[in-house]
Image 1 (cartoon, one colour):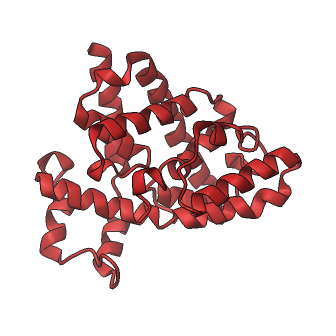
Image 2 (cartoon, one colour):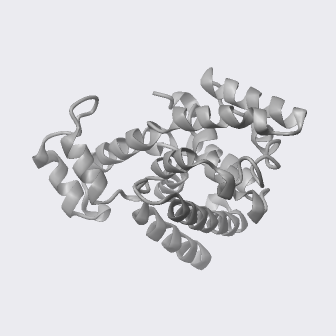
Length: 243
C-alpha cells in the first residue's frame, strides 16, 4: 500500500496540473453557445477552490465541463491522422491507420491490437512528436488540457514531458496492480488519461484502465507519441461516451 500512496500522490499532483488555467477560465466565461459555462456565481467555486473543496455535484459538473473542452479537439486530431496517411511509406501501416480512423469515426471502440499495430508510425516521421505539424500539436495540447497559445517547440516539450510522466506512472501502476486502487483513484486515473469517468461504473473504468496500461507498458520511450494520441483513440467511443 505504501507504493500505492506514493504512486498516487504523484498522479494526483499531475492531475491537478491538468486543470486549466486563467486563459481557459476566461474562455468559459465569454462562451455564448453550447454549455455556455454557466453564470459567474456557478463558476466561482471552480475558480477559487481547489478540487478537494468541491461538492460531489460540483466535481461532476466541472469535470464534465473540462472534458467537453478537451473532447472538442478529438475530431480535429483524427483528421490530422488521416492527412498524414499518404506520407507513411509502408502500405500495411497505411491500411491499419486508415482502418483505425474509420472505426473511430463510425463509433467503434478500437481493440488493443488495432492501436499497437501502429506503434512504428508514431516513433518517427510523420507522427513522431517532433515531426507533428503545428496545428496538430495545438490540438493535442487542448486534448491534454494544456494551453495551445505557445510556440510549437514549447508545446512539443510540454507534451513530451507530460506523456513521459504518465508513462512512468503507468509502469508503476502496472507493477502495483489496478486492484490496489480505490474506486475514486481508478476514476481519477482514467480521467487523467482522457476518459470522462464521471458517468461510468467502477468495473468499466477498471477495464478501460487495464486496456490503457496494456498499451502503455508495451511502448518504448521512442513510441510515446502513440500514447499521447491514445488519449483520443482509446477514449472517444468507450461505452457510448462519444457525445
